[in-house]
Length: 290
Length: 220
Image (cartoon, rainbow over all chains, first blue to last red; front, side, top):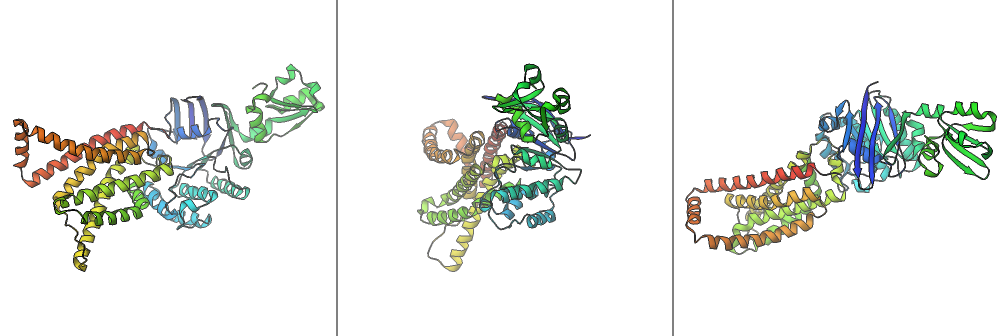
């Protein structure tokens, strides 16, 4: 499968934080959720992809091209939505569009007008007077009006009410109907990804914990619940993380069939949510093995 | 790249108009011997306000993140700022000339001094020199300190001019200096103007190269 985004051995060090040789790739036509707790390195990775930060080592290829050598060419085909709005608050939507549109070779004015209508965005309104949801939609309208093939989004749904979030997720899902487009989507609201993501990449403390399909996680991983009596060091080896309380334990395993065979009816095995997965992989006090 | 200049003008349009109005009233009160400074004051004032307002908007909106996510090369972002020096100056001069023409036609009791080509060239040299120092500092340290930097520069510039005059008064006693001055003075006005324009362009080119180097190393 052709990769639209490929990150190999990417390294970046700051005082007190290091992104450690991270690797992942996103095939064309899919949505990848990039999850991890706050401060895990999600925004740093996105800034490195966008060449807003300088990498210390490794390689980033977008559309098969180096993101620094072919920066302008790549950015022609990238749409970006960041957690904060970086548009000029004192300009109106239409003024901001007048500034941005000529910078893209493939700007589609009709598409832009269509998206303004669809997203209910008044062209004459100043950007600073828009709600957060509207600002995200405006960023999305810009991103979708120049034929972007890859949408890079950093926490686009954070701080939005459930209605707007659901609306945005529907837009992402409909976008991906065009098999030429891909979305790389960082978030700590994992429930958003339960609905739309095809691939999940988990990052914690600057390291990639895993990068795989969502189906692989949902089908193979399991939340195991049972009595504490059955937990010994040998059994704990099968767990990613375990949470114990006075009534029993709950833990995450990577291979639920294996644990079912081993513990049979002594435990209950359930499908995990992405939040469970993130929690057990990243919360230090729950961690057992990898 | 021209979009970026348009962006700066859209952001600062109201302030630019107010600045132009203020400067026109102010220069109309200049004594006769200072009238040649009208163009320099208008151009420097407009460029100062344009730069400061655009810079403050860039700072407030963390615009470097937006600009560097768009299909723009960093040197284009830098170059746009340098070109905007001339655009602000041109807007100032255009407004001044319009007001001068209007006051004449309508017979307002304010006398607006006409601006000649020579004064504009001196204006170009002044704004080039000022911004040639300011812009590399802005691209190196960001927009945050730009307001303070510009004020320090203007004071420095005023002091610098009086220092240069004092220096000239001393140098004028030397033969080699007298030779250079008489060589320049013997040239036609066109050659003198070309020399000043070339000097301004050289100063700006060196400054621009420095700004590109600084900006390419920035992280956002």
